[in-house]
Length: 126
Length: 110
Image (cartoon, each protein chain N blue to C red):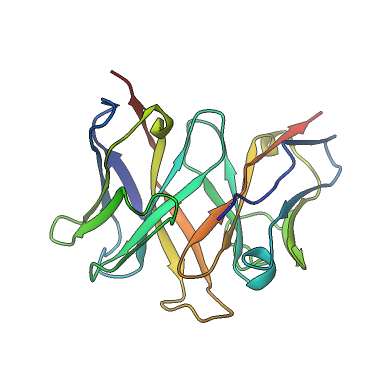
């Protein structure tokens, strides 16, 4: 059974960098895409980005300048860094495996997120 | 990239059917056959219910079904049960290897 577990500080000061790690068990990290998704209090879900085991990445255009996602296959972990945080970055952060087609075309991209971690609340406050 | 539009809430009585809509644009929902739906009990991990618009993962009851027409995708839950009461989110591929979620819908079983 594939399980994902987020870990990292629950409190980050404004202007600092938020850092989270997701540990994967029950599956090889050297396949699939691995994503970060967040949910601010009282709001909907927001896709942040993904990393492939090769290290290739892609990010939500609205956050692209602040987000970095990386993978450490030896530790079966992938990580999120979000720099220059503000209180608007307060959210529950989830990691998830992205299943489906390896590549996307101009008309099709079969991918979905399963499973997800339990999520970790990160509060941005001084 | 704007969030997909979902009704904030829907409700139905046990045994009835409800449909949750998810409206996007031709750049996301309308442009691809990659819509998925997630059930989210607060405090727990979101659970995949539907992928590729209409497909159900193993273990998901056939009471849950998905469809799409133009820029709007829909999740229909038939034979409502008390345990279906929670939040539901849609997600669509939005091109250039990016994804967008909906704002979420709270389902109340009366």
